[in-house]
Image: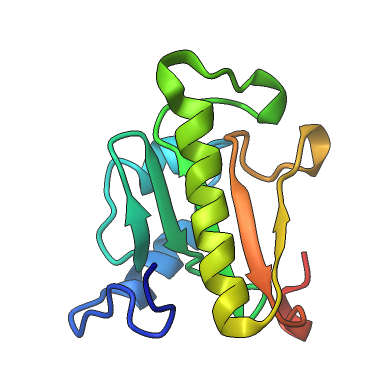
Length: 137
């Protein structure tokens, strides 16, 4: 287990620049196009050869962590366990959710499919707390 308050804290983060750049993004898969190729500035919670978990760069909740496969999969309906990817992805989601629950008392795990997806790349959100008024999804 890892501590939510001390995960990959770096003093050299370039987060404000990255947020502005990502805010101008107009493609349909921000994870394949920007996040996976260049993780600079991300607060990484966990990374394996096939899965990445990181704090959202524009959080909508006090705790807002994103878990993605590092290969392109549109949504949960397309996920298979080829090469153990589904198992590793769900193990990571469970591990991060358990960490958040132990430190925050509760969390939600969600994913979107179809028109509810802003980015057409499978991603799970592990969130805790009330949505912020400025960023309600």
